[in-house]
Amino acid sequence: MIYTSSCDKVILDPNSTLEPDVVNSTENLIKLINGVQQRWSTDRAGVIYNLTHISGLNTKELRLLNPGNLDENEILLGGSEVSGSNGILNNIWTNAMLVRKEATTVIDAADGATSDVATANSLKAYGLFYRAITHGTLIQFFESVPLEIIDNAPFKSRAEVLQNAIADLQTAQGFINSGLSSEVTSGVFSSVNLENSVNALLARFNLMSGNYSEAIAAANLVNLATNSTWEYDAAVPNPLAFWFGSQNVTQARDLNFGLPASLLPDMNDQRVPFYAHEPAPSDFQLIGFWIDNLDQIPVYLPGEMILIKAEAYARNNDLVNAVAQLDIVLTKTAASDAYGLGANLPAYSGTMTQGAILDEIYRNRRVELYLTGLSLEDTRRFGRPGATDANAERNRDFYPYPNAERDNNTSTPANPST
Image (cartoon, rainbow, N blue to C red; front, top):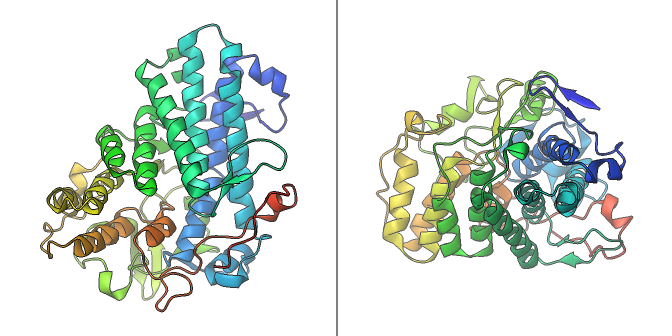
C-alpha cells in the first residue's frame, strides 16, 4: 500500500495488487483511479516530468545544467543522438501505457463492480479521461501509437489515435452530463475537475485534428474561473519543482520562451516574470508553477482555451473573431486569471491577414503555455522550421519508438529519420 498524507486515502499499488481484488470492488477501482493520477503526475519517471523535458529541451524552452544527465542530454542534442534506449522516451511510453492499461481496467470492470448505473458510469468517466489523455499525449511525440492492449498490437495513425481519444472524451462527457456519483467523486483526488478537464482535452485534441468548429464548441464549455490541477504534498512532491530546484538537471534557457528573433515576447509582457527571472547575468531561473514542492500544476490553462478559439477562428479565416479571442489573452491581467497569469498588454494592432494573426497566436501560445509540453506539437502545427530546415526551431520532428515497446511488439514501425 502507498499512503498519501494530504488526502488521507489509501492507494493500491497497481503493480502489486492482484487484479481480481481490484475489479470486484468499487472502492478499489476508486483507489486505482487515484493511483493512475499519481503515475501520470508524479516522480521523475512519470509522464509530467518527461513530456515537459522532451518538448522543453527540443524546442529551446529549457537548458541542461549538467550533461551528466545523459538521457536529457540526448534529447537536448536531438537528431540522430536520440535512440530507442533513451530513458526519457522509455519512461514516458511505459508509464503512459501503464496509465492506459489501468484506466482500461477501470472502464471494463465498472459494471461488474457495482449494480448502481451512476456509480459505474462515473468510474468509466474517469477511466476514459485518463485513457484519452494518454493517447492524445503520446501522439504528440510519436508518429503512431497502438490502441489495443493485446500482444503485438498494431500501431495506428495520428488521425486514428486522435479520433479514438476524442471518442473516449465524448463518452465521458455523456456520463458526466448524466450526473457523477458522490460515491466516486468523494473518493478520488479532488484537484482534477473532471468535467472541465474533459472539455478542455476535447478542445485541445479537436484543434490538433483540424476539427475547428468542434474545438471552439468544447472550449466554450470550459469554466475558465475553475481550477483543475495535479496536486502534491510533502510525501509526493511536484516533480518539476523538485528537479528544477535541485539545480542539477534543467532550468530556463533564457527569457525568450524558445521563440525566434522575429517573434520574441514583448518586453512588457507580464507573463515573462511570472514564469522565469534572471537573478544573475545569464542565470535564468524558473518560477511559475514550480517554485515549491507543494505547487499545483494545471491540467490545462484558461488561456489555452481562449487561444484554441483564436486559432480555430483564424484557420477558418474568421479573422475578426480570431482577433477578438487573441485580444482577451493579450489584455488579460493577473487579477482576472484563475492562476494569476496575465500579459497585461495592448490589444492586437498588426495586419488583418491570416498569416500575421496566426504568428501572433503562436507567439502567445509559446509564452502563455510555457512548459506545458505542447510546444513541439505547436511548432509542427504552425509550420515552424523543422529539424532539418535552416534556422530550425526544433531538433526533432518525432521520436524513435522506445526499446521497451520494440523489444516486446513485432508490430513496432521503423523509427522516423527526424
